Image (tube, rainbow, N blue to C red):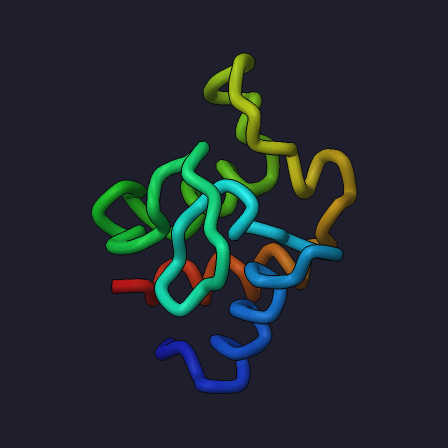
Length: 96
């Protein structure tokens, strides 16, 4: 199912929000202001993950694959809800 504009906008809002995903604290994202450089730039995301589920698992708990990561476990620690993670995954998957 193709990503719709409202879904993409909601996911972007989560990614850019300091109160939610705050992805810009560590990652460069196109059109993001004052990005961090701790993590990789978030572009061409599908080239780095096999599928959306793998990306979702990374966001849910990045410590599963790398116990030394500085990325917080957004799902495991209930920083983001299940729905917010799904919206974020849809947004990130569409980044070129």
